[in-house]
Image (tube, rainbow, N blue to C red):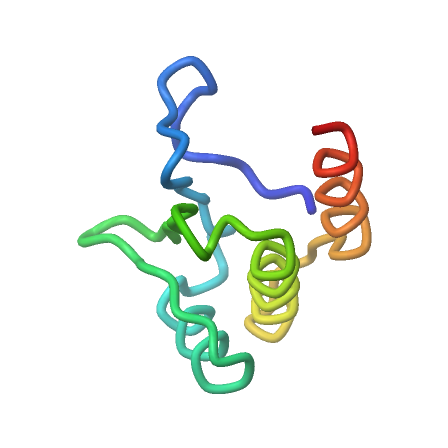
Length: 99
């Protein structure tokens, strides 16, 4: 989708991902939209304009990954971010198909 992750690949946890929100977009606005419109809850951070998505247990099932990614992309667009949601969804499909 063109978003950047907070932590370099070699230092990331498998269970949570930190996503840097574009400068002109509010992480709180994105989270509120995701919750209200898509009924998907993710975390923010204290003091940083980032989003955190947990990927454990039930949330790791393919249908929930697609739902969360779509909610994130749609909500980022609603908050003013310029992202490539179809590319993000296609990449998720590619990665899951390769597993």
